[in-house]
Image 1 (cartoon, rainbow, N blue to C red):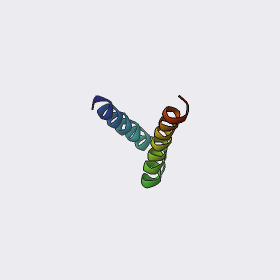
Image 2: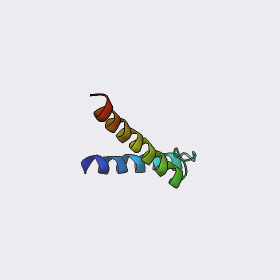
Image 3: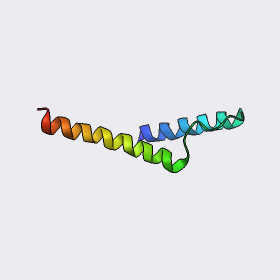
Image 4: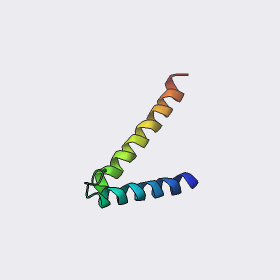
Length: 56
């Protein structure tokens, strides 16, 4: 839970600084960004499964 809280705070600070400096937001649009994160997580889990199943 602490890691999630720190991630949210860090993201908010970065977003605030970028807005203050009038820079574009350093992230993809909301849904594609979320789907990219989900894809990375699923790929990682797929590797863990493949390694446990076939690379013993």
